[in-house]
Image (tube, rainbow, N blue to C red):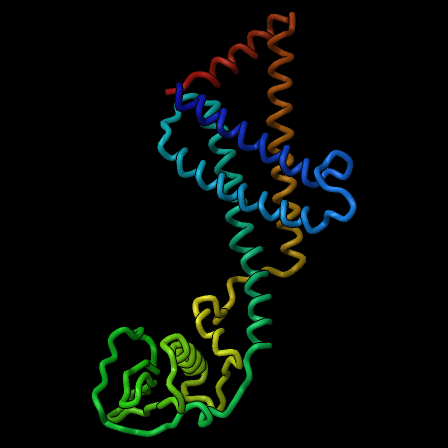
Length: 273
């Protein structure tokens, strides 16, 4: 039963602290901030979100090691998992998608399109290059040529080698390699033009580059999902509070029937295996 008490008190304190903290940040009359403190309020909300998700993740990890016994704790655990699922769904299918759209728009503004001959010298050879480290599904692969990193398109008995007109970093050559492979997948040929970053420092963020989008919902569908999550959350909260109020009233009732029902429910909630 000690594990159950730790679980229940941790959940209670967690939500109480973060609800009060949120209230004190955003309440117009009793909150920490007044007119002129908008910047501080935004920073505080950002810290609140970071602290909430960090604490939530830590608690979720710790709770996996607790062996719950009481039925009430198991019910609360299901509700906690439901909240976790809702947060996960929101992060992956709504928040992450919006960030991708924003990043993609910024990337497109930072790119310019040039003729491929301005970047690479194309020539054929029959050399046998070491292709290890490349994805097997790539048609165009990164190789180490005579003058440094280059790209190679393997054909029947020869290679079409793309030799950069300047020394490229691994991140830079990898960006062009991926771009050519995505184009090949859709068109089965090499493009006449290629996109490059005017600011070469942006090549170092190759893992953040949006090559393809996550599954998208229509804007009206996102609004419905958000409303649905809010309604479900409020409904669960109201039902939970209402249940305990009703149970308390039944326990304090002078009516023996209601009191026996309340006692039976309490005994079941506190029991388990």
